[in-house]
Length: 300
Image (cartoon, rainbow, N blue to C red; front, side, top):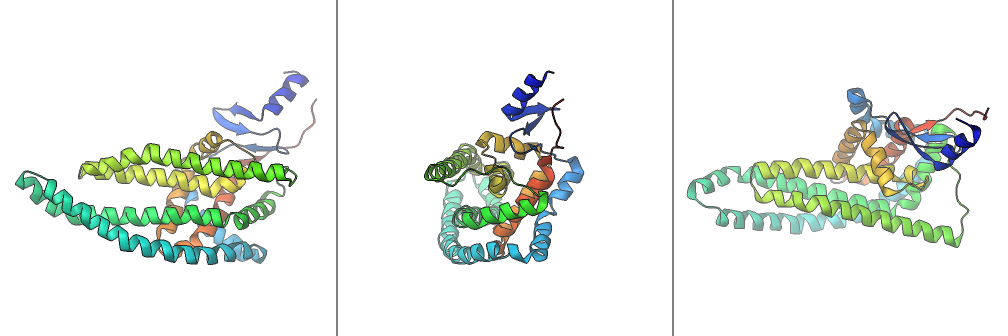
């Protein structure tokens, strides 16, 4: 390949190496190459929240960027969980009463009575998962100025350099706002397009509920990974589809990471602290399993 061809390939910024999405050439020698790691990667993915706690403990200068969002999450979490418990439990009881009245014949009604506690338990679990995700969305938006600074400083500590930043102008601020709004809208479209069919599966007791639960967990894990990795990915001005490819390319490590973070943000009260910890863990995951520091070399 000639020198001019090499230059053109670098300027594209997106190529393919062994079937994996790779982005580099314009980010100061940084290449984005997701590495899932098979079974070992799945185990490693579970450890990133603990690694985040360790990093925050070792670097006190990062803690102010965690404390401020926790205070915001405290007020937001009290409001959301009080509302979900008040309205959610009544809605579940209403659904179950209508389901029992609707089911025929009598033998099927008896089976439903036996399964009712299990169905109610699954619905309550889904209610807390949804509340945790809502808290996550609002918490990430309200805490984004702190999380962005936290992610930048953490990446600088981890790899020693950041991608070139745009000058802070009115135009760049408006572009950032536009990208943030589009990102949230695209997540909402993804959530509705997949979530509504999964929600309809709950109309079929047993198998339908199982499909809805597994699918809902998978979708929630994907949305959570998008949020936790976004601070680092957005600095590279990646498209929404590219972000999805990087997350899916990091499977199964990204799946185990997302599941453990989903569990943390779904636990009432604990999720107030879990959100900034998971944002920290997402940046660590990005630096370790997506970002590759390309060796500096001159064209020959």
